[in-house]
Length: 465
Image (cartoon, rainbow, N blue to C red; front, side, top):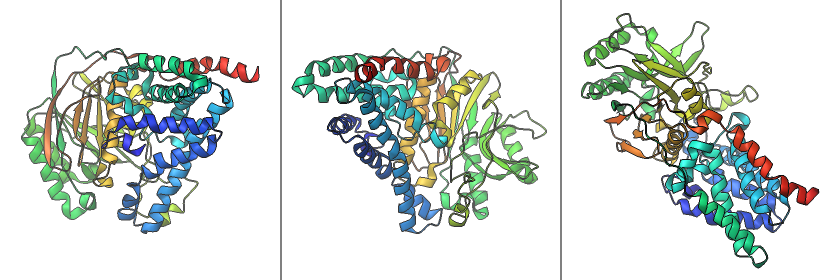
């Protein structure tokens, strides 16, 4: 399963992997098979967390590796639940094909919400490479999990003589679902955005001695572009700008000289001593230095805050920052355009992107800093999530990343333009604001979940009725 996702993109491997998983469930090993399947998917797949914890969390290699194994074990409980639920509903009857596919959707939805949610490498993301991707604008990434799960189960039944006709029916339905409605493109005129990739190494990003170089890079790259808006990545300004009058005046002068609105990642302090990570908007005609700000609402556990029930982690990872989550609609209005903000990790969550669009976002802006994870698969898996948010909402996604991957993502999920990973560069790309509402934005996940529950009633009645 780890090789199904970017940067490997062997998406076809999902079908034999899921087929073997289904076959083991049929043989009577649901919980063990589900746990092993999940441990390989999430434990091995998240190996890149260990170097991050070792390098920046200062954990010994053994303890860092143990943390990754523990994360994998916890996450593996959800595929175990998936397998148990499938067999509990339908037993080993042919209806197991349907319950396996439906349980996959519920498992993915639960993974996106339980314990604050971690829908990293969502199963539906593999459909980005298939003609079925258009269904994301109807049913979201969780709903797309139904298709590969149904097809894999159907293939297993097709190879068994007693269930061959069931397999043929399931395969026919899944192949029909591979044809999806086209994603409509926005009709508004083109605009241009300059996305700045500063390429600041993580080991010097918060170093005061490197601050001049950091600001020089962003200023020089921004001065060379011609665009309707300039966007810097997450925490591009790595200090409290309001506490540094000289730098505040310097930034005012830069924006006035460019005569272009600027969105930049930064941190904001409050009178109560707390802080928020977020995105600022500054206009060239702002003479008093006032800036609008949208804070990050969904924080990264253990990275941006430590849950109250494990305060001892402060002694293990003393440099973890404690931010407070923001509230509000998450939209910055610059001129006539509403920019929906997805700060780093927030791009994993379809409900956040949906909320931005319902609040008036005509384009989504994803700013991030994936330098934490070096040259591992993490950055590539992260942009897959952003691509899915584009399809679900029917919006362009403007993605500015510190070290990459910086890109303009079209509403059909395709990357329309990008710049190389781990380079200092700027990208000027075109986008179109949109005020259209996709079915997924209008209805969310609940109609699909309710409908799938109804579909399982015949299987449940057959077993328990």
